[in-house]
Amino acid sequence: MRLSLALFLALCLSACGLLPEQIDETKGWSASKLYSEAKSELAGSNYEKAIKLYEKLESRYPYGRYAQQAQLEIAYAYYKDKDVASAIAAADRFIKLHPNHPSVDYAYYLRGLASFNDDLGILGSYAGQDITERDPKASREAFQAFKDLVTRFPKSKYTPDSIQRMNYLVNTLASHEVHVARYYMKRSAFVAAANRAQYALKNYPQAPANEEGLLILVQAYDKLGMTDLRNDAERVMKANFPKSKYLTGQAGDGKPWWQFWNWSY
Image 1: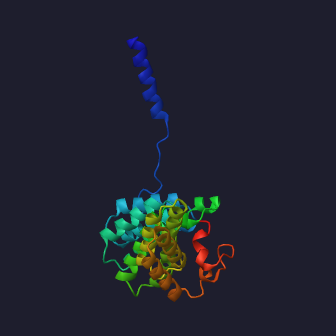
Image 2: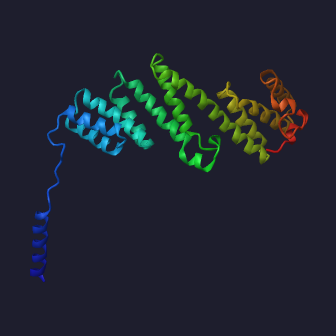
Image 3: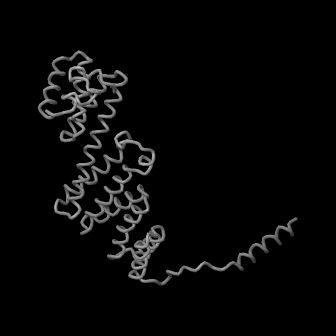
């Protein structure tokens, strides 16, 4: 038995020696060679291969401009490969290691883009789901990343686009709060509905979604018998949305304003 086991092990070892040794074709490449090859793979949408080359570059040549650029472009490659978590982690790492780098504004921008596109999400688009009905975590993270960029680098070339995305995200976040308030109204949870509507109005005062938010606030206060608060909310709504479809009766199947609380939510 021992002889058979020894023979088996000897055969395994000899077989291992017959296997061809894996050759690293990048062995001996300079930093510039690794960078140019990684850049070529990135341009060809071969993101996984590009990331591996960038990682080899950083490992072999950890100092200098090529290594720093590789760290930044790894974040971009992850972003293009739709690996949101890795893209954000790589961008955060670059920001932490190189807070004064000339391209650190781009790292903030990438971090925002990764969260922004994660929020748009392929799952929601295929399912036909309203983006405002989904968990707003990614929207909040994207908004904060773009806000950091705009605040720290107001003259960055990425700032105008970041501001536009922030404006979109503000209404998305407000719409989410209004959606939740609407949900509570359907279930006669009027205090909760009023609180969510108030939150949207307070934190996203310029959002178009606040038109419906005010409607829900008036409706909730009316149901709670809080006449003064209902009248105040109605006055604010008329002042800010004088042509609102909710005031003119163009919403809710043509029911007049004073019957808006009977509209189905």
